[in-house]
Length: 490
Image 1 (cartoon, rainbow, N blue to C red):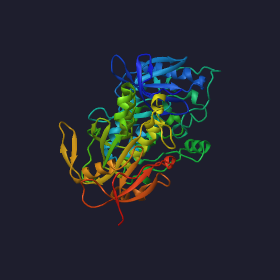
Image 2: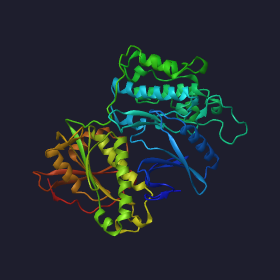
Image 3: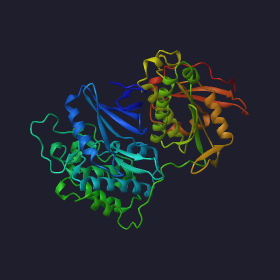
Image 4: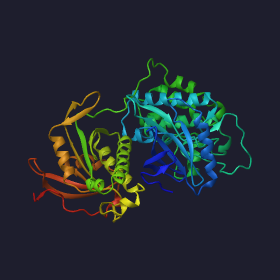
């Protein structure tokens, strides 16, 4: 079941598809009357056995109100399938945030503090989460300071609730790398002590960027978990404070009876000797060497002329895809004009990954058939839906205040990035050689397909610009017209 942008589900209008997994698919949606943003989570229609679990989790989640938790506000129905409505959070998962940011001690402490507060409040109110992992934690970037929010209460259990014998469902469930030893034998009876083990696993990931327990198979991972074998934090972070190590040792104890008693007790160990808990700024404009990305939608004017309602729905989906990818890769939204974005990154590799992420996200959207039937939205090899051109260039632009906390950039680097984008076509990612040289040696094997396009004279700029084309491997068959610039042979 796919909900195209513009689909109305009771009082909610779908704006974009957020993500999909084996269990469910999530959509960003807007309330028609209140104009508020929400997430609609639709369980897999074929997995009828888990539908009630989604409703049970939503019922528990609905009575929870805390700044470090995501609340459920409603349950809808689509053809008899329950649809859980949750608060929309403007930010990436903790997993994506850690992978796209270089965190110092203060940043790690700020993230850890939010985890402690959310989990402590959850336990104080008689609920065990039982599915804590970096992908089920969201970093809320809507305010000046980043805030941790716990999500996904599908496996949550009210404190002291008994296991109903014979109830349909697996005996062992969860994500192996974040399951406590007792969960690997029978997840149904696990409680708040399992949360404390998972808390330690998440804290380890925040500190080191590595997963504490990860084997080549599920059973191999379970063996590591049951034995409590993991690389010491100092292997990856030699200067890690001893207080972090002490707190982790309270969490990662194989016997749950000997595990730290509460999240508060573990927090006390984590912050031992710290007089003031730090805050983590949500969005910071990069300075110095900055990678700029310019984007726009091909054929948007014609789309508006043909069908304004369709164009509105499609461009809302486009904007949502762009901003979600920006959050995942640590980008800074400089400004927008119509369907054009100007964004900035401190790390050129994250800028490239942002562009690739956007191209994938646009392709995977369940676009309305009316769009796909149009020439610019046709289903051609490697293309589907809206086509967005993207240009990347790295330089040292001049940052200036744009009012309030906003920052804009000026200078030759900005002009060159805009011209690189303008030379491309919808669905194409062009990068300057200056950017490619900075990321080539850092790319994972087969992460992208690169093609050297040669040197071009870009309108209004002196000299020649070497350009490369970057695409995700699955879109390698995309074909484009010639670059919209004068080619030269150097």
